[in-house]
Image (cartoon, rainbow, N blue to C red):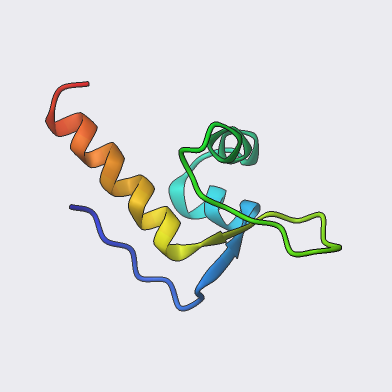
Amino acid sequence: MQTINIPKSVLYVSEVASILGYSSHFVYNLIHTGQLKAYKNVGCKSWRIPVDSIQDYLNTQTQSKAQGN
């Protein structure tokens, strides 16, 4: 299981993209397909991604690879 250590509890899309080595477009796709849990605060346009959600996503990816999917 891959573990990440991030000093913040919530990140923006660009920060998640940088940490995971993905494009922002790919992170938006993960959000819209439900693979990465995120939310928007009322009146804000920016997605917020909890660090726990990133960890859950990484765990899912690790399990998929272990099962050969």
